[in-house]
Image 1 (cartoon, one colour):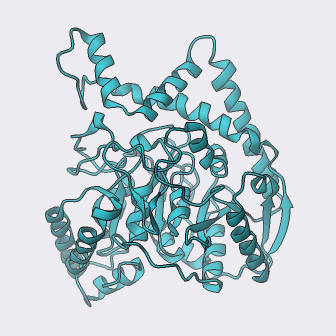
Image 2 (image 1 turned 90 degrees about the vertical axis):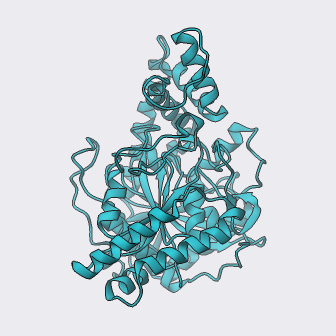
Image 3 (image 1 turned 45 degrees about the vertical axis):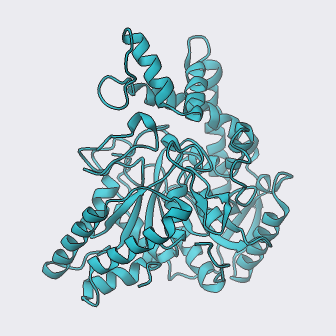
Length: 483
């Protein structure tokens, strides 16, 4: 059974051609075969999966059509799943079992989805390679010597390697789009507020978003239509109406004005990636789109800006892990202060501790205005750049990452080099706009490259309109997977 099409699975289960239990068994068998190699999952409970699938079969027989009937979905390990371990891939939460599910997970399950397992990620979503997980490193299914990207690397690989039809990840600075680009799947960072953050373990609250993965625009739009929309449990959830993504995918793109930001094509862009992206731009022109040169002049400050704001908010959010109420507690501490220090020192990994220290410094007395306050003003300038550009064009096209997937271990000891992996993605998070990674080619070494499509706030439908037309006109023939 093919797990690559969520639409076909839901149609088959709803029509009774096959059962959700059969789909779940197929997914579990694929996980058993492939996951020991790529290590995308950190928690899979087959008995619970099959029980849930049987429940979906009963619902499909007794009720109306379920939008995601029997569709196996991988969920990033920083999204709470009721009665299923959620660790954020950190030792400090190694045995945490939430008493509730994230709103996005709840909505998927109400639509008939089956959570097939929890996907590996960088600890507390802090990283660009999934090497910062406390449990394992997820490997790229196109080249097992290379990273899957991060922080949602497990979610991207689960879909790319055919272990799940769909996946949920999270984005703070590129953590959906970058692994999607590295693994040749679609990954969407939605408008901030489009999907509820309730139940997403907080990293940087003004930047965090839940983001879906799929193999094609139709499946991605289907999942987004289920999980998007206002949620009273999340004060930042927007009341904006959910668009008709499926309907928009049938609209022509001839006449669309697409901006090409010159700042995203500088000297740091890998030549092989540049060649593939430039070919994708020419392809867009053949669809009748008008390509327009635009400028986002404050892009050069984006990485520095992001790595002040995100660590500052992380420092505040991660203060709750004090070893008192829940989570890991170091034994044999002499007093409360020592318990705090020892528990947090041994419970958090190196990258998380690095960001907590940076953020605490940026928020400290005498430095708040010089760092965090100034960074928020620069963030406004970056947003204004996008506002000006979208006054001229319908969407923007750009690379997702300056390089294809890099070697495992190549950057883990060089934080600055790792941070620069996000140079083309953090701007969408800082400005709150939606952005998609769309597979558009492979390097001569067979490594995937993604085209980034960015649009105005709450204009995900514009992104789907272009992505669907491009995918129909220029389908990819990917090299074989290594699993």
